[in-house]
Length: 201
Image (cartoon, rainbow, N blue to C red; front, top):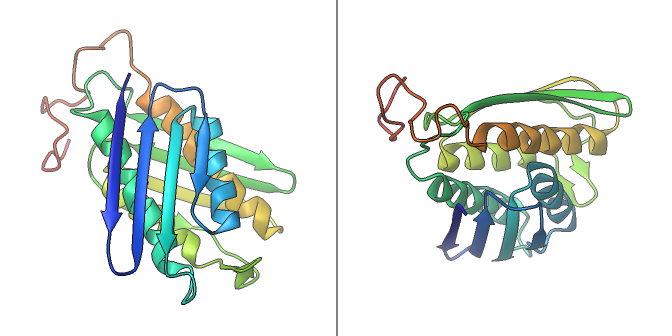
């Protein structure tokens, strides 16, 4: 199975994560931020990636550092677990409805980090969490997982539904992209023959 661990320790946070890309969607998440935990549980459950995460951060200041750094660490763990990305389907997308909300996510695991974020919110906070922090999480994850990631909320009114559909869209897209393609399970899905960080095709 494709498993990996990653950790990050700074003056602001201490975070450890472990993933199993070939899991069943089992999660054990404790970031200290209730809503973020809920989103990471959705990510695990709908991607079938087993996820364990422990985070301690400077929540007495705000949620920014902990939110961003969990994205960094989970992204690093996913990248490590992918290895040379041999055999993966690489590209995937999902369109996720959630009541009145519809969100589209598309990604490429080609090790070219990039985020397009077309998601707006009608309120500055969701519970105690600043809604602007969700972009920070997705940016950190994309950068450190080596993902070209496009997230677009097509329409919606409820901010909870909008955010949750973004995480579920990422989850379902990851589930498709990390799958091993039986037609090329020993090949790197690139004409260059590599998906290293310097690869551009």
